[in-house]
Length: 278
Image (cartoon, rainbow, N blue to C red; front, side):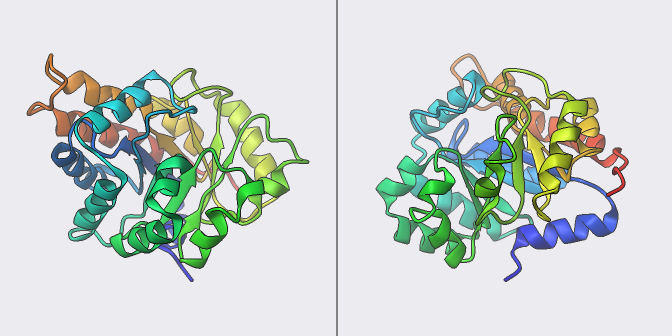
């Protein structure tokens, strides 16, 4: 079965360029504004959207994305409302791949079987669940794949060649390479080191390898895109959103444009990259 993610990477390969992947938190700073931001991202050049599922204890996220999750929860966002938001987005966009990213706890509480049915019918294409290792594939990964969703796994600088086959087993859609050791937004990615890591992972898989964590500028996005199949930006977009809010943390007339404007400049950076010969 070909998913929207598979189709998008096939199309990008024909274009000879990398994917620009954007991350925003569902419901940040409020559900209505968040939906408008997600709708604006494909027009700004986003090829794939990662939508954060707000959670109270996000262990892999830095202060910016933690704060985004708390803003969303304070505004009443839930997993049920996140799926409703995806459904609403799909009314106007049936092509852009959409991946839910977050932690297992909200899905477990929701109920795995019910979640997978609801996510698939809403128009979700894939899942990135950062706290479920390959040893727990029976929990969600295998049922998700059976339901027709891509299960995207994280590889990190500490994932050695011995561990990599386990990480890649049952992975589909793409491999998400975390470019730094640490939390989101804590450091900048080194494109030369990342290039070597991507090449190493590609020796183990035919899947696209996309790189995230530590990409904040069009120049950095361009450098990463020259060596990887995709560049993922999250913290910089979340920071742009936060900077547009009023003193009470509420959305302003500038909020959607602040995120979409930065996304557009980052997209130009990715599109300016010359793909390394495979």
